[in-house]
Image (cartoon, rainbow, N blue to C red):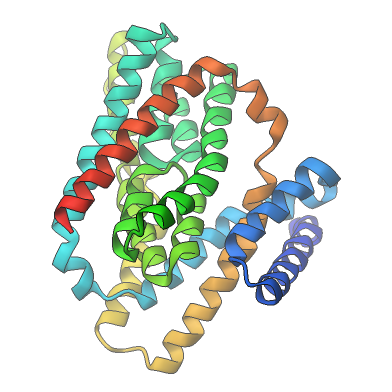
Length: 327
């Protein structure tokens, strides 16, 4: 019965992916950005019938599966050669972004504490996923979750357009552009999309960098849960919270990367894996585009957007400056 509920939406995603690849190949545009645009048009102009929604909502599953498979095309030798520098940038920029949002939200714009924390988590870690994860641990109100999620989605939509333009203007290499996108953009889907829109190398570095950021979500949730629990006189949350919020597909990505780096996979198998994750990404990004609803973006309001815009300017400028120095 559950499979029947998912089938119409899965068929719609598949048709969208086939249409996207066909048009992209014919016109010569990036298929991932085109997939997102198709989803945006479908949800805001045509409208998504209710019977399609359960199947379309599986797009996060296909994104995670694509990221796991992408591990098969990663060389751990290359990653380890610069991994320490990238990790320092990830931790430094993530912490800076979180602190900047918290300070601006509480001390400059006088937003509610929990609202500021949701914005900080979304901007510094992994977008709406971080907003939802932190919201559950600090008992944020539904309207605060909606405002924070809407604000994050607004900047997801903007950065999908702006980052490729800036990358072309500055003539950034694939490694620098991908790492920059991975360390400063918000949600995983847009990061992967703009990375591969630049180049294969940029797409891989964008994904790896973003995964390292996403892995910090458990720590951030634990810190926020502890802070608000102590403020309310409650107990300290357990380490189970850390594991529950950890993005499990990161482990699959690392496992397949280890297999590929050990030389187990033949060239033909690696080509097949690359083709598979490219199709999964197109499928996922058609669904991702349907989540960008213009009415939700308009409802987010100006103040949270200003806070996040200032933090994004700081994080993107800081991270790009550091990367240009390091590479």
